[in-house]
Length: 348
Length: 261
Image (cartoon, rainbow over all chains, first blue to last red):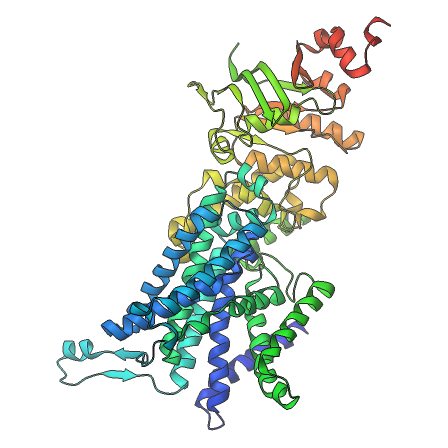
């Protein structure tokens, strides 16, 4: 049963991989798939805070916005390469994460959530009002798409031509987004199954006991905040170079709430859950976008559906779809080895 | 006396409440000391001061992991753990949804070093360290007799086993001084017997033990030295025989007039 399910999953993954190259591809579907991948990265990034550390962060979208504007402005003014911009945006997001985290992570529970909420509002106000930098509510249009420039390689090989490929349409973004999701996913798995990840989970489970084990609570919360913010900013950088236009109202509070819903729906602290949560809620959002106007309702009412989902999850399955915490840890080679050792000991 | 811990004139105030008033005592290296007293006497507050959770309002706490003695009053809990003070909690505080092994692996935190980059890049030294962490954690689990349960969820253990797991987690920090807060609470007689053996085995590892305990029979049996607190004040300090005969102690436990009856 389990084996059959796995085979089915692999087949579905292979079909999804090949889809953009088939003649059945549809621009709208591809667009939604890329959007799902952006939210997958966001959900994995946010998962670190409420999922691993037990910190309610309502201002995650602030870092997403910082990343998007960092990428957008660097592209507009300096025409910088995407491959350079992504790490810069991530570092910039992490920097703001530390700036916000150091003074506020001493707060606990609801107080911390309120501060993060205020931060994301602050980011939107800054983007709206500091017109000299961000052009305000007009947004930043005309951002160049991602391109791969290998002219240096051509020069190196002595070929006199420009080896430059600029992304057009959704297909290359699909594969670029996939690459980003896979990299972040692998990184998250490695973090979860490490000294750092265990310290985070200890903070979530019991801060006092964690401190008694030698975990410096403030330091590890700040690291979590920085990593989470960095991933959020990275997704923002991708978003800016994909939609080619950004404006402050793309980074309103609702986005934070949506990403939080994905993490809670998937299962707090479960990386696979974050991915599944992103798929479900983005797909649902697109369905509602079509269905609601037919019912004579404005599309904004879709937030009612998200709220309803949250209420139902809290009532019937408070742990989310995947309830297992530290799931990837149990799949690591060391644990498998230990399991075999324990089994051998039992039979001896 | 070679003291691993000297508490000198420690007071702790919470607003108008005096939880500890000018308490002084010393803990001999390599011995078991008992800290006893009626409910609300300030025993756990004393532990929290030594473990760094509370900063004493007044007084000095001198800790000598090896030779050098230093005043550690007001240091943070993670610093105290690094210096060699570990503790268990009165109301068990395990990482409930993690495995037994992970609980103890977190105990290795302060003796290991891998950081963010090591974790993401899986460097050779990080992988070697992870392997050592598993081995050290398993050693601690086998020591308390929970090796077989390493991969079960911590919250699935029986009450007595959860207390043993807390001890294993504390031992994983390689302490010189172990503070046990009511380790026998909720244990049946057989589990208590096993606990006595375990405490002696811990002592044999060169770890000094201080325990808070309400089970007087247990305390009188395994401690060479007792300190009695009542209403935040030390009322007796000495061998079990001396303490048992002390009229203040009898009064604190049984009420006024009991000593004369």
